[in-house]
Image (cartoon, rainbow, N blue to C red; front, side, top):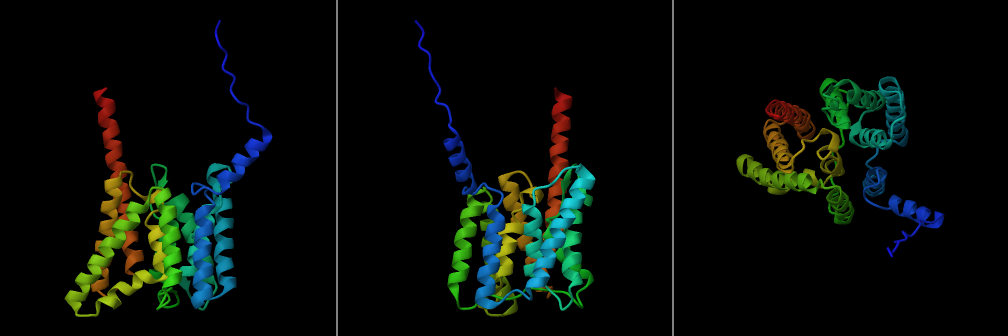
Length: 285
């Protein structure tokens, strides 16, 4: 006589409990927006890093509205707005201008780039990196970037680094951040030796909130990074190398421009290599 195995049935209470637990996992898409909001709150309460609440809210609003409209136009569906929120709040934090229009324009350019500048179904640039780089380059007389450090108060930086490292590690992107930071520190020492400037001044930028956004969100963006683990580490090294060259040439916004140039190029090459492998495999079979 065969024995029948009875599977335990999930009850509505169990299902509801599992749904609530899923909200508190690091795989939840709302975790990065909450983390970037934490950066904003800690940075603003500690140093008043926001230029104004209205400008930040404007950047977020334009980013979300643009995402909704373009997603409906291009794909006929409503998008998840976590990415748009991250883009908008990044623009609000990183941009500096006496006018309001750069915040709206930067968010609009950032979101539009996701839908227009695509290759084989993928956008090449991290949206906020693209928009901020374009505004800094084309409207440098009225637009600047956030440029403050945590100063002598280490606790805000330690909190952000601890939470950011945990989130990025769980998302399997910590190796990108770690590689970039390691080479940034190495190149900072080399720049100090080459230029004679104090090593503390060369290292100081990485302690600022703008770099927290850069290393935890821009350079690790899953949509705009190459596929392999080694490739991601190599690209992080190239970004740090390009940044060093730009800094030696007195380029103020070196990290943004370095990622702007290196990231899309590496992604396009990676996509071309992957397509060639698929063609070769198809031909062989």
